[in-house]
Length: 184
Image 1: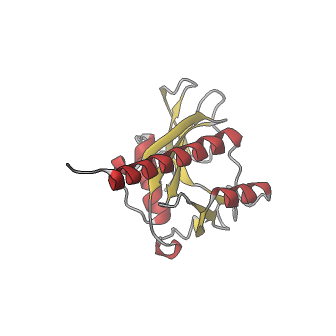
Image 2 (image 1 turned 90 degrees about the horizontal axis):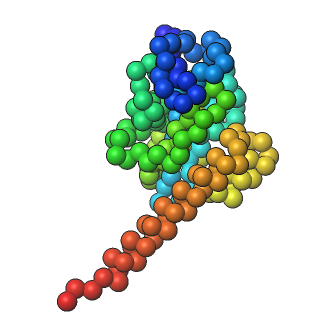
């Protein structure tokens, strides 16, 4: 079954036009894309290796993600992609919007979700994903330099890593406050 996408103008307003995935997106129009970065308690991100038979970037490590289907918003699409590609059932309140950016042909919403499970515990969609790996920031940077991981751009990774660092600092602060809290 073909995927149908809604199209949007440069300001993010939905236009009265749809497109079948694979068709060329007309100049000045965009679709909605989503990326999901599972993060564990130590701050490592889960990346996935794209299956060898996929059309875009086969065999390359990348974020979990995809495109919103007609009628979906970014959050609904992110939850669906997470379920389809990794077998993870997420609730809307578990998904943290890190940032949005306008790319060449899409508005991309980037989410993080806290997941603590081993790599072998994910139920991978074999048509899309061949394996997953937890990676620290230094490992991600090495994979970017060596071309193993898709490079979404410096600003993208800077925003993602800032989110991670701020998130871990807040969690550390909460743990320390709970330990040091005295009852009188």
